[in-house]
Image (cartoon, rainbow, N blue to C red; front, top):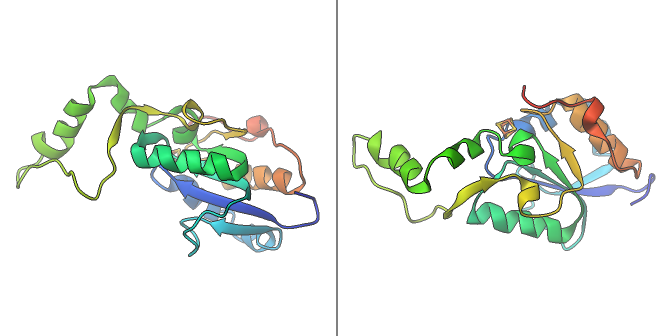
Length: 180
Ligand code: SF4
């Protein structure tokens, strides 16, 4: 990665609400400047759906709640030089981790049976298996940059990307805080 060449960036969401990606889009007109310095090579925001072999920066939103989340996080860690944990769900589990206070079977029953009046049933097909405990990203793979916030502000995301583009490892502590 150099200050003059474009860096490649991949993003995805795990167990989150996509609000962190919405905050990314809230960079508004700065996105025009960004695309001159960054290639987004994989993301829910673009059409490409195959993670390249080598990516400069991977950005993960959301926590690790399912087998699918776990696989994606490991995949990002394997293929991305720098891994960014974006938002409180990724950094500390936040809302998804609230279910850690209960047994998984009780949570599933509550969601799909206790509160459903028409054909209560637990889905088993087309949905990834849930893990018994929700973890932040760094609970399963190494993370290089933590960006707290629910969501982190567009200004914070802009700062982090600008630092990475310049070839520096950002310290977002001055521009972020936990919560909204
Ligand atoms: S940190 Fe907040 S905005 Fe981001 S995915 Fe979690 S709940 Fe949504």
